[in-house]
Length: 206
Ligand SMILES: [Zn+2]
Image (tube, rainbow, N blue to C red; front, side, top):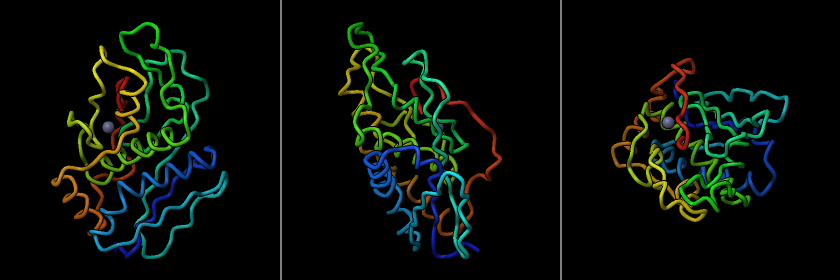
């Protein structure tokens, strides 16, 4: 039974500071709440504490994203892996240390997601991308500005601004994706269960 509430647990959100967390929640809501509303349900976002596991609310559909700190700061700022497609695991440190990684040597290692707002927004974009895999069963695509895109700005024109616009920009669903997500949420049948095949995300993408 699907129930009327969609509970989205943001595990590990306690690792973020208040500004980052509020940006994360704002942008997750922006990208995902309209889908849930169109499915006739209510989105409830929870942030379980360090030790607590979320109690399953009765008559609710539970989705989760796991935000994790990498143990070590990545040695190569260009080899960032932001999440593991399909698992819902999202790596905070990789977002924090993401470099420009373009062809311009002077700014190559300059960090991109340096404010709470852009970091929170980029984490939300990666989280929603994961929900697209899990809920909708979507593949990565090359559609500019789409939640499932792994296109990225071209190497030759990468700057802090273009990288931010890409990774922390406002993204959207295609009408077809939206239709599929609404139908899935409505029925409570996600495209995958939690054990589906783990696929590593290539460098420079999500
Ligand atoms: Zn993906």
